[in-house]
Amino acid sequence: FAKASALTTTESSPKVAEEALLLSSLVSTIKGKHIKGTITVSSDCAMEEDWHYVPMEDPSLKTDVDNMQEHQQAESFLGQRLASKSIALVAVQGTHIRKPVAGIAVALHATLVLLEFKCTGVWKEVTSEGAGFAAPIRELPHTQFLPLNWDNQQGGDTVRLRYRKDGISGGNLHLKCTQFIDATDTRMIEVEFHPSGSRVECQNSVLFPMEEHFNLASLQVALTKSMDGSVSPALHYKSLASLLAQFVETFDVGAI
Image (cartoon, rainbow, N blue to C red; front, side, top):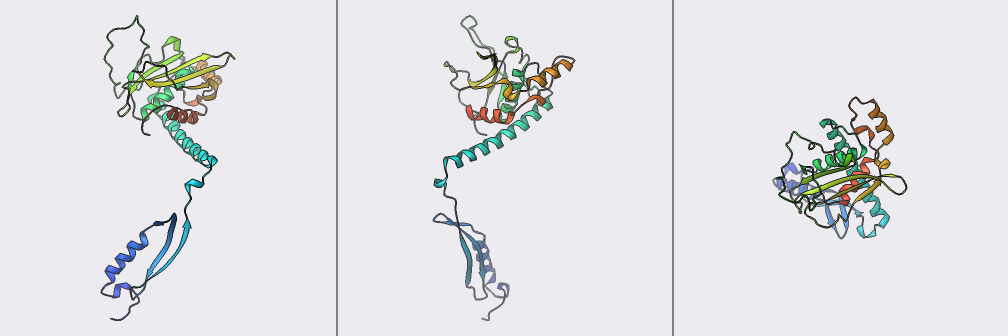
C-alpha cells in the first residue's frame, strides 16, 4: 500500500475525504472558547491540526452601558424600519390629514397594519346613556385603509381606532390619540393602546410635546396652499423612528 500525494489516489480516499470535510466544516465551542482553523489530511491518513483559540465574549462581563447601547441600537434599527415602511404605506394609500394628531395617529395605524393588526373601525367610549346592543364588529375590507370619519371625533382633537390580532389576548384593542394644551401652554399628544374589555384606566401611555414628532410650521404652510384643506403627512414627521420604537416597546403588540 504505497503512500500517495493526494487522497484521491488511495482506495480509502472517499471515506477519509468525507470525514476530513466534515471535521473541517465544524465550528466547535469548548469551555467557552471557539476553535478555529483548518485540518489537513496527509497521505497516510494522519490528521495534522492547525488551529488556535479565539476567546468568546463572556456575556457576564458586559456592563450596563454595553447592554444599554445594544438595546438602543436594536431599538433604533427597529424604529427606522417601521418609520420607513409606515410612511411608504401611508403614501401609497394616499391618506391626507388636516390636524397633527391625525398625522401621528395614521403613522401608528400604519405601523399596526404592518404588524398584522386588523382595523375593525372607530370606537366610542361607552356611557350609561349609550348602553345597549353593540353593532357587530367586522374587519375593514382589504381595499380600505382607514374607516370612514376616522379623524372627525371631538373636533378632530382625538382619534380612536379599534383593532384585533391573532395571538393577542383581550379581544379588541383600542388606539387613542389625543391632543391638548398643558399648563405651560405646550401642545401635547397622549397615545394609549389597550384591550377594549378592560374596565380599568390604561396604565401605560406615551406622552410627548407635539413639536417633538410633528413639524407644525411646515404643516400650516402646506395647509394654506392646499385646495381642500388637507395634505399628506409624510413630509411633516420629526424623529418618527424613535416614536414608533417607543410605541411598540410600551404596548403589547405581539411578536415583531
